Structures are given as C-alpha cells and as structure tokens.
Image (cartoon, rainbow, N blue to C red; front, side, top):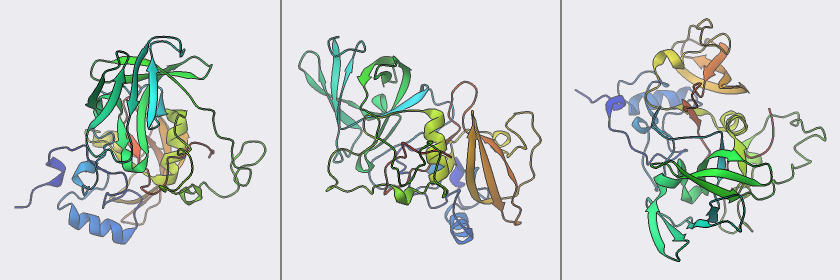
Amino acid sequence: MPQDPCNQPQTTNVPFARRPFRLIGGLSLALSGLLLTGFCLEAITCPPSAQAQLSSFGFAPQRYKDGVNYGNGIYFAPYVFSIYSEPSEHSPLIGEFHWSRKTNSSNIAVNTANAERRNISAEQVFFSFYPQLDVAMMAVIGENGEGWVEVIYDQAHKKSGWVRLKEQPEPNPASSKRTGQAASSDHNPTNLTPLSDSHPGDPPHFGVYQTWPEFMKLNAKGNGIYWLSGVKEYNRTIRSSDSDDAKLLPVTIIRHMTVKHLRGNWLLVEVLDFENNTPIGWIRWRDDDGNLMAFPNINQQYHPVIMGSF
C-alpha cells in the first residue's frame, strides 16, 4: 500500500521554486501533482516538504508554531553584515557574519568581537536561507527610526542585536505613478532583475527591511503561497470576510489560487476548483500571535520584491 506523502518526515531543504504541486499551477500541473503525491488529494493539505524535490541547500518556514520568532518584519541580510549590541557602530560588536552563494551547508562564518572566527548554524540566524538565490532572511523585532533595526541572530536562545539598513531604492518611474500607486498593470515578477553572477553590485534587496504585510502583499501576489504543515483544515478554509467567524465558502479541490489583496493577517484570494467554481474570499496567512500559516513561493530566478503596491 503506498505511503501517504503527507505523513512523511519533515525536511527544511525545500527550494521555493521546486515544488511539483503548486497552489498557482494549472490543471495539467495539478493532475501531475496528484500523481506525484499519491493519495494526498487536496492541494492545500499536504505540507510543502511532501511535494518537493530536493536540490541545492536551502530552507524556508515549514511548520506552523515551530518556535521561531518571526518578529514584525524581515531584514534581507547581505553577504557580510555586522550586528551590534546597540544601534550604533560605536557600540560593542556582537559579530561580523559571512555567507555567499557558494554556501552549500548549514554553516555560516562569524568573526566575533574577540577576533575569533567560528562557524554557526544558518538555521540559528535565518528563518529562510537560499544562498544560491541570494535569499537570507532574519526576523526584525524593533527599529529606531534612524536607519537601524533589531534582529534575532540566535533563534534558539532568542538573542538579538542591531544592524544598519541601507538606503531604500527609489521606485522605477516606468512602473509606478508619481503618487506612489502601482502602474495600471499588476506587478509581475518578470519585471525584476534576474539573478546573475555578472550583475553589478549587490542584489537590490540586500540590507533592506520590510514589514510582514509589505513582504506578503508584494511576494504572495507575484509568486503564490504554500501552507505550512500543521495548519488545520478549518483554518485553510476560504471565508466570506476577513474574520474567523465569517461564513465558510464551499470549495472542492483547489487547482488554482490567485492572491488579490492583503488586509492585516488576511489575504483576499480568487480560487478555481475542480468543479470550475471561482469563489473569492479570505484566508489567514498569520495568526493573531504572529505565527506564520502560509509563506510565498519566491521565484527561483528573481529576487524578492521590495517595492511596489497592490
């Protein structure tokens, strides 16, 4: 009797763009996903690790209520960054952290204040890390309004320090109106600069801070989402409004889901199911305690989106 892939052990090595069964896939992709995942018939039921093919090293949020403090935002760590005990470069240095695209294991290097160089686990520092994709995300728990944010650099022991932000990039006038509103066409990830070793300078998202709502509305819309394992079926159900007490909308197996809008901890989505129903309703991406319930499928070929609007 085939094993239920939904009951397979969890793994953190799950690249964003290598899930054979995507929430945003079409009918043919969904049918192939059903074959690949055995008896797991509901797209949003299987944890992403049950649907993934492993490739290069990397990890992203996988489990609901996994003990990770995701804070109130994200710091996109560059290849080299320094963490201080206070929001000042004159305060004691906690460490200078190093990683690169060639990082192919869970270890990253740290130069300590005592001039010692040691390796530490990337899972200790980042909650999402894909070195070959230039993605290294740290949880932000505070900011001083003067170009510094407080980040968690040790998730296991809840230790934090301060990093200096780089200046935010200016919006592209060709894609945004003077008022700051989005252009008439929806944001498309193909408008971003592709990853390339020959691209001059650091990737544009390095050293940037985003709040969680900013990150989700820009990246969930462009790339789709996946559910973290452990999120109950009731909490994955589409609702008529952004409330836990709202009416549940009848949906069969989802074969296509498009994120339309974000409001607080809720996403407005349009769904196409296998009976060709197309309801529009709300789903949670985060609970009221700050635990992630869903996470964007960041495209393998492009950087995370750091500017724009719905």
